[in-house]
Length: 81
Image (spheres, rainbow, N blue to C red):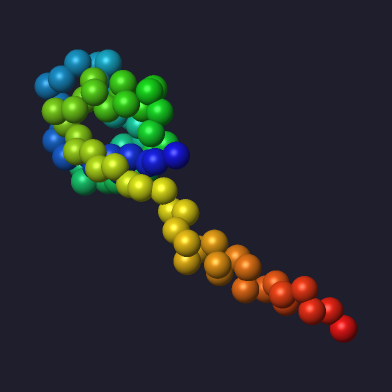
């Protein structure tokens, strides 16, 4: 599953209470703070509501072939003594 990197860019001062609550619910506390969430419809909806206050980047999965081969390095190849 891909992830979303959400950065709090603009203050919520002067905006509705519901938008301030959405910013807090995303886990953003101070300006320029960054959180990473799974890319789900719920999170997408929250981001859409405060899209004028945040910036969003999609992060691809961390399942690269190098990570998979690193997990197999402890395997002795079936040669047991």
